[in-house]
Image (cartoon, rainbow, N blue to C red; front, side):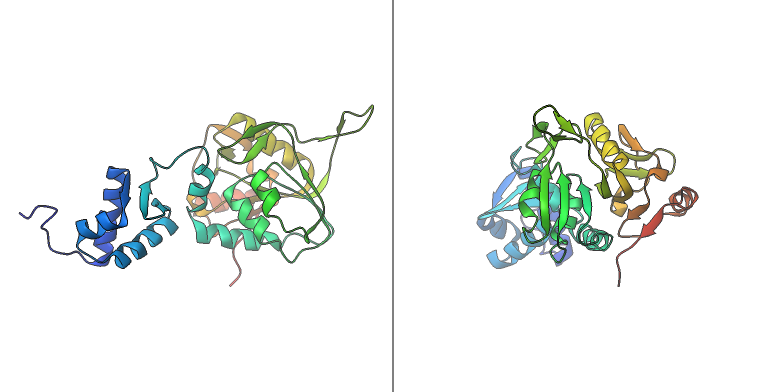
Length: 270
């Protein structure tokens, strides 16, 4: 049997699978080393690394790549998650943006899917936007909003977000102002027929639930990889949402539960 270094050249799909496994094991590698290791050109390796980065398998760096376990934190964790299910999140964000009307007040939570929504609001105008996403606040186009508010609280650098009460500071004798909005757009970590919507952090779950309570309508954003999952902290039952914006039709059991809870499933438009 040939050793890995003397084995015949693989087809591209097989090479990329081996390449991904090799980078994961090595932790950090250069393009030159990979080209020599897999006996292909540096340009071929660069293309493979670019594709694997887009698929969320590894993180592309200048001159090479690193495995996800090696990627530095906290500065790149959000960026790493943004590379997972990229196309699905963009489609969900674009579809969710169609629910927003000019002049409305909206609440948007922090997350990679809701960040795709923020980027899809470019053509909207005169919005009042409240969010706990530090990244979203910087990426929202100034032409989109009349007023932009960021909720205070504990800063989580890994998520580039704040965690705290869904309230805004007042003036003088009114330390906090209660708020209401037309629409809450909330990205969640899991969607299941029995538990409903959930996430991994209890404080985050509480904040997301409060965002939903302060909205006339609620749209939950979740790609199909979240279906059938149950995470540590429940956010709300399925019936708390008016819409589930996703990329693929839910499986039969979840679809039935959503229909029973009167939740409208919105898929990307053709």
